Image (cartoon, rainbow, N blue to C red; front, side, top):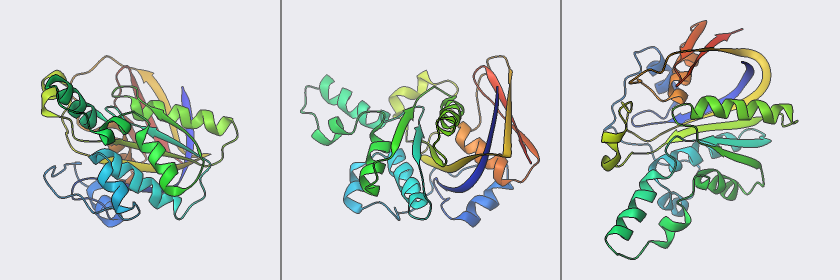
Length: 240
């Protein structure tokens, strides 16, 4: 498989990292995170909307709105491995304890909640999709972006994100080495700036970073090539 994109704009948020210069400095390191650091306040998201969103969704929508405020966008692709897991766990806990369900939790528990809230907050009826494909959610979202480019959507905004994983699930996620909310937003066009080829690989165990953050680290580092691990494929990236 081969993919090719130009990166028009980007924005990202994670504990202790929100400014461009912070992310550029991070890209020169070993990609460590202080997961206990504070999250930056939302810049583009209305306060009442921000309060209704789970941790990862809030970062995702805020990053998307940041790019939408300064760029023209034709379609949206959101990718999340765990989606609204925080909210769904609260719903399941309430059911198990025979308590009343929160209407907000119920309404915001679907996987496409973040992308839906983005179009509402931006007041733009954009074509959108929400991708979940395990550890490869970011990589599969890139294929979705390429499909939209082929269909005639010139600029596609990809947002990869996740929130805090409830402690209850952690023993069942052996390869989960990073538990924190984050969002990476990339505005992509068809082009030859970043090229990707895949090759089969053996199923591996623990992984250091979610793919979206691993891609951002490789791209911002200005290294000519870098590789993303996957569940059954390796994604070899090169810049031109």
